[in-house]
Amino acid sequence: MNSNNSAYDVVVVGGGAAGLSAGLVLGRSRRRVLIVDAGEPRNAPAAHMQGYLSRDGMPPAEFLTEGRREVQAYGVEIADDRVRAVRPDGAGEFEVDLGNGRGVHARRVVVATGLVDDLPDVPGLAERWGRDVLHCPYCHGYEVRDQAFGVLASPVSGIHQALLITQWSKDVTLFPHTEPELSADDREKLDVAGVTVAEGAVSGLAVEDDRLAGVRLADGRVVPRSVLFVGAGTRPRDELLDRLGADTRDTPFGPYPAVDADGRTSVPGVWAVGNAAGPKVQVINAAAAGYQAGLMINNELVLADIDAGVKSRRA
Image (cartoon, rainbow, N blue to C red):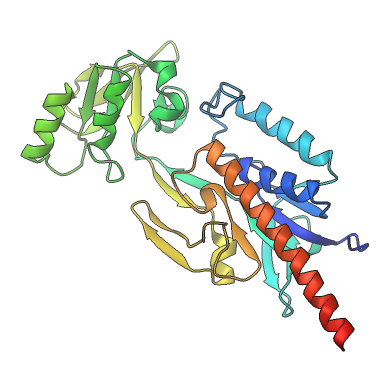
């Protein structure tokens, strides 16, 4: 390890599942690691996270607290701060500027900054996000099973979400809202699946006793619903990668950083993992991606040091 207090083998930007997992592997590999976390996890509004084997139902904040405890046991440092800039140093490594004015050096950088959900502009939607306005049936469907579901159509999901969630409830109403007219083929699929269509733009939500009671249409009608699924748009928090000139790839959800199977970006020495690299990554997938990136970074650093030693000997 470098004895310089401002020099790290790896700086991880983002302390969610992906970033902490990368830090865990690297800490266990006896690397000097700094995780910089701004404290803005995407799943903060949710009371629980599901689908993570052995951690199913755990509150997200508890999961992150436990993850921090685990990585710090291996000497990984955590800074509650932001990274303002990552600058190549001209020798294949990086200078990293933190929001508090501190500057550190990193041989490698992992970007695990997640993404931002862009919700439709419907009054009341954001306030209930993660409670009874939901996006993912695999994350929340079992907990709200057999209730009266609504689906707000969006360019992201079309009718797919309405068809999918019939696995969790047979009482499903699709709100086309401002999306284009449904095709005859779409209407036939919805009819076969037992999905009702409520025509008209959505103007807001009806809430009673701090619970969703229905979806209000522009003509004044209120369709009783207790859960509303929304196909939110997403944007990666990729400002650092953009400034580094990292390549992007087109997805149905918009452009995302282009990475290989191990998380490498087009910028040598920079990895992107979790939702920073893809919109459909669940918590357990993000942790796996961080693990894989950490493993490959350690391998790369070991071989780089050996190659440098060989060159030095030959010189």
